[in-house]
Length: 64
Image (cartoon, rainbow, N blue to C red):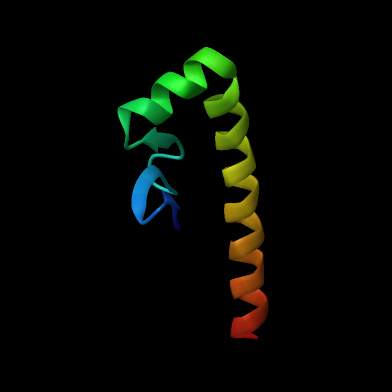
């Protein structure tokens, strides 16, 4: 499972099921998160893990 966040056709974040963590792809994104919401990456990583599980369940339903 891979989730990519884009702003104006530029990749700003990357998450995949192997690492199970968000990787900021732009320095300004990482700096903005640190300055305005230090818990952003931890909180959003948990959210993406939930989305991953929901997607996995949906794929199981579709396979049936």
